[in-house]
Amino acid sequence: MDAKSVITVNIVTPDGSVYDATTDLVVCKTTVGEIGIMPNHIPTLAALAIDRVRVHKGEEKFDEIAVSGGFMEFSDNTLSIVASAAEKSEDIDTNRAQRAKERAEKRIAQAKENHNVDELKRAEVSLRRAVNRISISSHR
Ligand code: ATP
Image: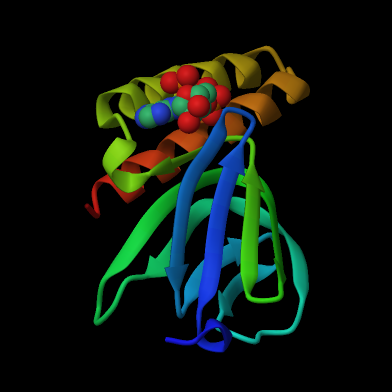
């Protein structure tokens, strides 16, 4: 593959680099919908949802990375994703995510009881992160 037909993908978090690869297709979920990036796609900047980033690895195979929100920027065949947290599917601790899910559900119930809108929003985001991790780890 020549440089014009590949994308370099970097996913970084405040803790450092989580994923680096070259590919011919990346599919990610922005806050306004799914986007597929292929080589020579127009420059793009978008906010990411709490969801999966899928990196094509040939045939029907994709690497899957859980991202907890953040931004993606594409230009010059380089896709940079900056996320507050990100984990490759094989690095997800499913039991930890399950415990985080249960904790978030309890917080949601409590926040509803107390009519605490701010806490409800925070707990809902925690729940989304946990459910996303569980869903991605079940695909590996
Ligand atoms: P927890 O309550 O289990 O800490 P959290 O959603 O609060 O979950 P984050 O604040 O999103 O966690 O992430 C903190 C750090 O822990 C990040 O580096 C993230 O990649 C990592 N992390 C969180 N949950 C998991 C998990 N289930 N498996 C692997 N790494 C995780």
